[in-house]
Structure formats: structure tokens, C-alpha cells
Length: 383
Image (cartoon, rainbow, N blue to C red; front, side, top):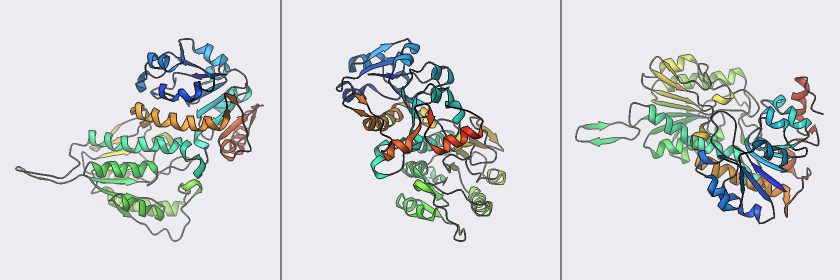
């Protein structure tokens, strides 16, 4: 059996699906591993390191696509790569099946078996495979570091002979994995941190990190969705949060916003008035930019200066920390592979709730009902 590791083709992508340190257990099962030349360079893994680990390194991408039985990736293969897949190949990665299901039609029809890391159920047995949380951790950290780099002020309070420098004030919106990591990082840098989340239950976690939790009375509306995510709220409930955010923005140096609902556009929580209320020199980092952004002024992928306020909308924060991001992601992928690889033989058992939850398509047909519905709505036949 051949496992292929490709160099990611998405613009700006620097991560790699597996690092040399992850290959030992796979090779011990008699699996042949072929790596595309340069696949791990941006993540600090040289071709020589893969060779030393026991893999073969080739410059021929088409050969790997045509022969690989198992293809762990960071992002979904593009249409040209999908057309070259060996029929029956198992592809694992962030496939965006709920955002761009039609982009997978070629692979589904090939047919390939597709597992999307976004769909791994958030249950205790699958925690070690939770790549979304791993990447959110990196994104939350990097968002604060990026803001600190742009802010024309220091984060910590300093008492010097020349006077006292007050600490920066940071406001984090969304207290999921990314938000909590942003809070922890800002606190480590010495900032005074406030946070808001529609889920009142998040308050305990926020306070445990030394930040102040800002609560809003939503009139008993259910705010907790599946898997620990926030639920999609009514406009009335969102407006109450928006009012609080606008009021708080006026005294903040940095806002980091991370609120997202899986498979949906990011909720628009930050009005233009909130940005205009921020002091010149302030920084807003919209971590939800890949899903459209939490700020109504966000242009995904574009950094703007709005009345002296820097609005950053990065599309791939984990790729800005490729070494550790790849390390975490590779461990998630390796643990997932353990569910389908038994003594060197692929075995896809869709009675396993983790595999069934993560499976997008198998044997030429969509497995995930939401993906099947979206493909049908788009007029795409994948069978």
C-alpha cells in the first residue's frame, strides 16, 4: 500500500499533512510512503529528513496522485489533482464539504473515499483527532501576536524612570478554542483583557484565564449549539451583543474576533460604528475572515486602515506558524489514520461513529447527508 504526501497547492499554504517524525509507525506496518519533493520545506522538514525517516522523495506529483492508496492532505486537492486520483483512493484533509461541496464532485465521481477533518465528531473518543481545535489554538495565538506587532503601543504595564506605561486593553469576541487561546496569549503579554461570548457558560473559562467576561441578557434564548459551538442567533439577540461590542470598542486598543458557526457565514457582530469608535492606532483582527468575517467592514484577505484603525482579515493564520501547526495537524491525522489502517491494510468501517461522521463520500456517493443535499441543490451529480 502506498501513502502519498503532497506539497500543498493552495495559495499561501505552508503546512504539510505529515512530518518525518510521524512516519515510523506507518512504515512499521509495511506501508510505502512517497513524498513530493519540497512538501515539508516551509514547515521545517527537508527532503533529506523524509529520506532519513524511510520515505521516498519524488518530484513527480502526477505519479503520486495516480498510485497513492491513502492521501493525507491539509486542504482539498484541486480539480486537476482530483482528476488524477487513483480510483478508490482515501483522501483525508480539510475538504470544506459544507462550504464548497461542488468542488469535490470530481473526486467523489472518481470514485475516492473522502474524509473531512472539519466533520470529525466532537466526542471524547475523537479528541486526539480534533484538527479544528488544533488549528484554532494556533490561530488564536497568532492573532494576538499579529495585533501586538501592528499596535503602536506596548502590551504590558511598565514602570520606568520616565513614567508609567499603562497596559494595552484587549477585547476578545468569541470564547471558543481560538478566543480562549487569544485571551491566554494577551494575558501572558501583560494586557488587560475583556471577552464576550453569546454562551454564558463560556464565562467560567474566560475568568479562569484572568480576563473579565462581559455578559448580555439575551432573554433566555438558547445560545449553545451542537458540539459546544454557539448556536445561530436571531437578529434581536445579535443586536444586543452588537450594542455591547460598540460600547466596549471605544476603550480598546485591540479587538480580536473569532465567532463562527460551522457550515454558516460568520455572524456579523461588529458594526461600522464600533470600528469608528476605536482610537486611532487601534487594531482589529478578524479571525473569522475565512467565513466572511465578524465585522461588516471586513474584506477577507485584505488589511485596511479605517480612520487610523488597522483592520486585519487573515485567511490562514495557522499557515503563518507552519512548524507547530503542521506538528499538531499531523498528530490529528495520524490518530485518524489509525481508525482506517489495520496492520497495513485499509479498512473503512462506516459503522464507526467517528468515521461515519467525518466521511464525505464513499464508493462514488456522498455519505454525509448535508453534503448530499448541498450537491443536489447546486445541481451537481456525483454518482
